[in-house]
Every structure is written in C-alpha cells, then in structure tokens.
Length: 252
Ligand code: PGA
Image: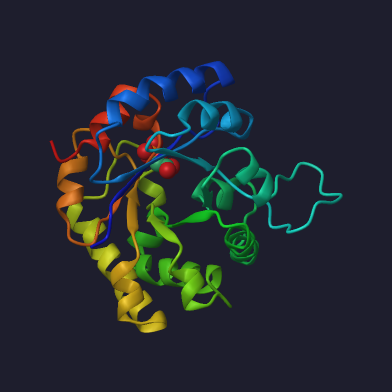
C-alpha cells in the first residue's frame, strides 16, 4: 500500500515569524493524521525555525529547491543538501514548473539536483507537467515522459524508488482550474505505466505520485478517490493552517 503524502508548497510567501505561526497552528490540527505523511515547504530562511518548532511532530519539512553541488565551496547563492538536512529538512521539491519556466532549471540541471538530494538522504519531490499549449496539441503524455526520462537519467532503480513524483499541469497551477479527477487519473496511470516499463512493476506500484494544481479542501476528496493519485502538492491552499489541515483530513 502506498502511504499518501499531502505536501504544502509555500512558495515565496511568509516571513520567518509568519512561517512559524502557521506551522505551530498546523501541528495540533494534523497530529492525528496517521493515514498520510504531512510535509510543508517554507522558504529557505524559515526552514530552521519551522523545523525546530515541529521537532517530534508528524509534520515534515521540505526545501523548495536544492543545490546540485555535493561539496562545500565557492557557489554563491547555493544551499547544499547537507545544509538543508542540517536545517531540519527531510524532503526537497525539485523541478517545480516555476523554476523550470522562470529560473532556467533544465532537465539536466534537475537531474543533478536529484542526485545531490539523494546523495544527502533527502527525499526528492520531483515535479513534472505540461503547459496548456502542449495539452491542447495532444502532447501532454509525451512532454511528461520526456521530462521524467531526462530527469531520471542514470539513476538506479533503488534511487528512483526513493523519489516522490508530483504531476502538476502548468495550466492548473494557481489558476483555480484544477485538472478533473479523470484527467489527473489518466496522467497518473500513464506515469505509473511508464515507470513500470522503465524500472519494473514492483517499483512503479510502490512509488507515490502526487497531483498538484489548484488543490483545495473542496476538491481533494474526489482527487484522492482516483486509484493512482497518492496525495497532493498544494500551493495557495496550504498557506492557511486550517485550509491545509482540511486537505490533510480529506478522508473526513
Ligand atoms: P496551487 O500551486 O495549489 O496554488 O495551484 C501548486 C504548486 O505550484 O505546487
């Protein structure tokens, strides 16, 4: 059985104080959520303070990115995987579409970041997803499998087994336009069968594939009903503790 993951991506929102307040409010609201793993991803500057306040709780902390570099050195602006571990992170979001589109994260770069995260024992949450133009042109599956093919290049099956995948159609992110459960299920099933072909059915059956893009308390339950949707990566609706807690408790 795949344990669902509900992850909140806070993007570039919240000061340290605001992040800590939200995390502290969230903690008791989800403390009995044994049915899923709960993860939040604050900005880098808030990570240590948030992780300290969540220590011993069931809420895990993710970074929103990770350096591709393995050794300390002259890499201005970079934060390495072991620094993220040191700050209390267990997970790292990698390859979010905003980074791909705005900050030049290529598949080759994402591949190096994945390797670095795995090297330091961080669980990568690898994002993939097509734009609206690509979907309208009937290329959604091709785009997603190309991303995965290139992002996972050279990784062993044992390494891939440690990754969480997040399918986030770009046209559904922050737009209020969620993929229907049928659209999401279709892509998730496609991703799983692609993984099965590449790495074997056992690995594909065990891998968690999250859906992301305008997930809200109102639509999470029907998304989670789909057999291949194993959780959610939530942006806007994760910023308020109460709304994120309602998503975590999608099962009622
Ligand atoms: P959204 O963002 O929930 O605000 O659409 C999701 C994401 O970008 O991870």
